[in-house]
Structures are given as structure tokens and as C-alpha cells.
View (cartoon, rainbow, N blue to C red):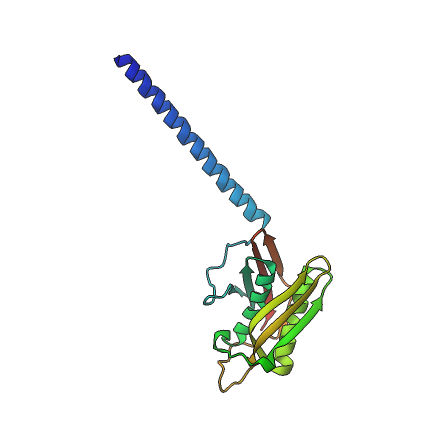
Length: 195
């Protein structure tokens, strides 16, 4: 009877060790899969620590300029957020009001996603430069990633130095280090702007 118990204990210990080894192998495989995914989509969720308020954007340091980083559950949301990031760099958008007379619809096209992103931000910056309108809300109403077209609506108000905090003016959009990263349920945009 003692031998049977010892034999049973050894069998149990062996089974426990085998289960622990299998669990360790599964954990290592999962870690390797995450690392491989991060290498395929560099930057996905690596940053996002400096989110501004409840917004899905942050500012990353870059020599003499600033890099806008935005994200969302879809590319549309990430594009909306990068537009807001640009305006927020010039004045805190949470302090803006919405004047319906300052709503603007924009439509643009490109030859690829990067040129479409550039055109989109450049058009928003043109609205600020010519009409001094700052957007508090932006909604991408349509996005065609095959024909590279985008339509969006922005709502906000005219910038007033007496009422609004002055941040740093964005002078131009650049293609430098521009990235658009996508995976199911997640998208990120990185854009360096000239300040």
C-alpha cells in the first residue's frame, strides 16, 4: 500500500511538472507572438502614456518640431484625433465653444494614405490660417482607403487672443517620419508638424 501511494505521488508530481512546463511554454509562445506583432506593426500601443485629457492623442518630442501621435478603434477615429491634436497644440480645444457659423466641411483626395493624411491636415491648417477657426470637434464622415478620399466636418469657433490661451502655432505639415498603422480594432497615426 505504501508503494502504491509513493508511486501515485510520483505520478502526480510528474503530471504537475508536465503541466507547469506546458504552461511555461504557452506563456513563452504568447510573449513571442506579441513581440512578433510589435515588430510587424512598430509603435502600436508603445506610447499612449501622454494622452491629453480624455483625448486619444499625445505629443512626442522631436528635434525642433513636434510629432503628433493619435489613435483610435478605427482609422477614422485616429484621423479625427490627429486633427484635434494639431488644433490643441495651438490652443486647448476643451476651452473652445462651438459656433455653428464656424462649422466647416472638408473633402480631399490623395494617391495613397500618407498623401491623404497630409492633404487632410493641410486643409485644416489652411482653415485656421485663413479664417482663424479652431476646431473643437472633428468627424470623419467618409473614408475610402481604396480611392484615397476623405470627407470630414469640423466644428469650433474663431480664435480670439483675448479669450483663448495661445499655444504654439503650427506652420506646416510634413511627410517626415509619417506613419499610419492599422490592425483589427486599432489604428495609429504619427505626423511631424513644423512649428
